[in-house]
Length: 114
Image (cartoon, rainbow, N blue to C red; front, side, top):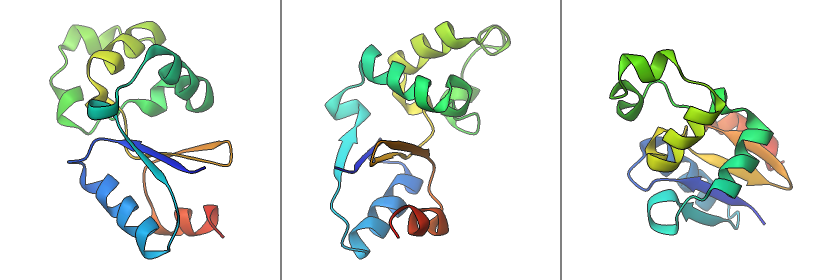
């Protein structure tokens, strides 16, 4: 099963879902806000991708963190912040055949589903 994680108002997520739909690829969509994000799920993401990669430093949620929070960011604090603010997680997060991918690039998805 292919699962796409994100939040519905994310433009990059919308592009990824549109691409999957256009290719006729079956997937399950998991909205962090609607469907939730728990510590166990997040620990799996961190183990597979690393906490640094999961933090979207370009987004408004990250920019709203205090300078102190940014300066003292480590795995434990990053996990706490991601659990409280799932919008800070880079999107989309794709899980396909046991592999984890962050972001959307059409050519990358073409390779993944080739």
